[in-house]
Length: 348
Image (tube, rainbow, N blue to C red; front, side, top):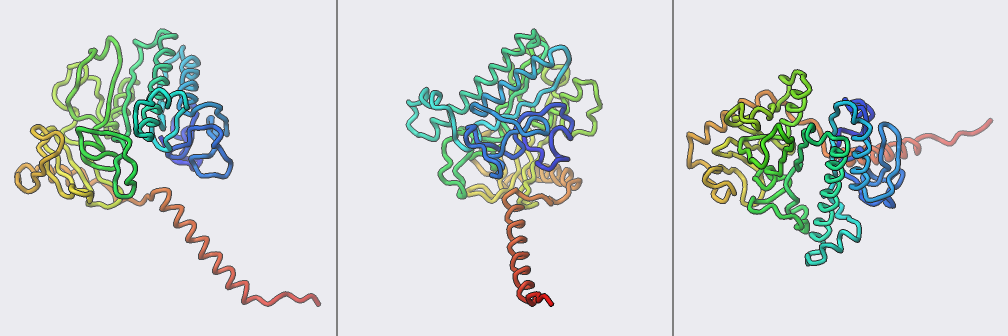
């Protein structure tokens, strides 16, 4: 997960004792695509603050390094954040894994399946490492996706290799196809096996749960310690509601309770929407303005949460780079005009 490329944002300056990976939001998977001076997807990997190499498919390289870390830390407690970029684009996988899925007609989906296969194999390597040091039963493992699979929105109409059904749409959407993702917790002997927890949970809860398990104060975090809910010592949902506000505009929002969702997003056949999440979990029937009392309750919850927020001042990397290019283009034109006004120097 990208924290930022500037030195003061890098993992070793943000609380991590050890880092192996890339600093951009993604990366090419094949080692022969690494270049010096390229974009973030092609830059060399980093080990802590130094440039390092990888000589195999990136997902496997990340898994192997995680295994080595587990063996190094086996004598002391540790927290490890293994943030695969798989199966994010670019769609790349080893040929032998793609061959396993030759029965899938769509080429993109075939590669996508192969990428997930390699990631799954890597997770198995991590689990085996915990078994090797007799710590599997003593380790809380949490697996989740950061968003739903990609959806062929208007700006990426050919990106149709994922499938989030029965939920609508996918990545970037505030519909369930974009925000309702796999979330698995594994801790033998502590969390009951094979149970499904239906309360409202968020990725923010991982930090709060981890900090609580470490015996530290998590009161300043937005998340909630999930363990009491998963063990049954606390009943109900960890959150009364979950909230979203996208950076593109302050009026792109969603608020989700156990019963309803109220949202606004300028996507085809979406816009302002209100859904009964119990009767219509797949958001097929927009009830906006037909249940005014319930809609008002959700609006009040969101407004109460949002009054503590500040307007976004950050930009996507491409927006930032575009401004830099524009600045240097203007500066170059200015320098050319200034140079024209200066007469040639004559030696006397």
